Image (tube, rainbow, N blue to C red; front, side):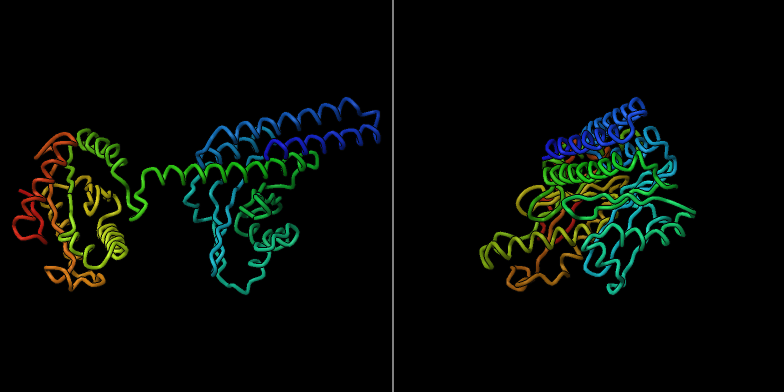
Amino acid sequence: MLNLFLFIVIIIQIVIFAYFLYLNKKNKQEIISSFKESLENILKITETLRSSLDLEKIFIEILNIFSKNFGYKKVFIYLVEKTPDHLEFKCIACPGLVSVEGIGIYSFIIDDVKNPIFQIVENYNEIELTSYLLPQLKEKLKFTEMFLLPIILKDTLEGFIITEKPINSQFIFPLRIFANECGVALENARLFKKIQEMSITDALTGVYNRRYLEKKLPEEIELAKRYKSFLSIGILDIDDFKHYNDTNGHLLGDECLKKVAEVVTSTLRSGDIVFRYGGEEFIVVLPATDKSGAFIACEKIRKNIESYPFENRDKQPLGKITVSIGISVYPVDAQEETSLIKIADENLYRAKKSGKNRVCCL
């Protein structure tokens, strides 16, 4: 599809080229040179954007292309993120800085659904969009003049590129092609990121899977070793989960697993990591955490799950959904991942044998 698009573009360029030759035979060499440069830029842009699936690298490359190939030093890139009740114009690249999380000082949100910009974005109209946004952007970016180049993908506005001054007429056509290529590159990078996330994420609960644990835990141990810090892990198992499944059915069992994952995730700190280890077992990795800190964190998880209003929890042997948790700590209990998991699992077994719904870290 992309090759067909480029073929059509080249044909159009050839027609324009022939037309200019017809109108101005005296400037043949100049026109040929300009035409050749435009084609070279298109090919370079296509190759560059296709070569990376990393969003930040793509945005950096876009800034570089504008600077090196078109002479624009002050370039801003915005993405448009839509929800039913607001539009976010997120600046993700500006001179000297690229961040897919957004650059707050230049980003802005419109949350008035009656604002005409909602319809302009939904039923994309370039003239209306430009006339509406330019005054706001000039004030936001402190520019006296600028040019807004929309990034369109499948008739949808994905974002726009802003230069600090109007674009030279000879660059407008190749830059429009460039903007379309940006849209394709963004879609490819997003799809790649989604595939990557799917490969390391448990489909049911949304937390990381065992495959990613096998990669991540050795990395965290190595970091702890380098910085001479502690690293704790906790293995938690839902008590009497087979009874819950048999009594309520697998659909409610799946809901229970999802809710447990949500409670664990919301309880932990931002740097802690949650994995589904298998069945009704989860592992939490707690960087820079000693045994007492791990006990406090896991006890908080235990209490939050015990108090959560799971459906039909009263049918459980303990009258509620509970978890048992076993803890181990690097480098106190073990110094490599297999032994660390083994010791945590042994402590989990002790917690189960001691009556369940408790944390054990001998």
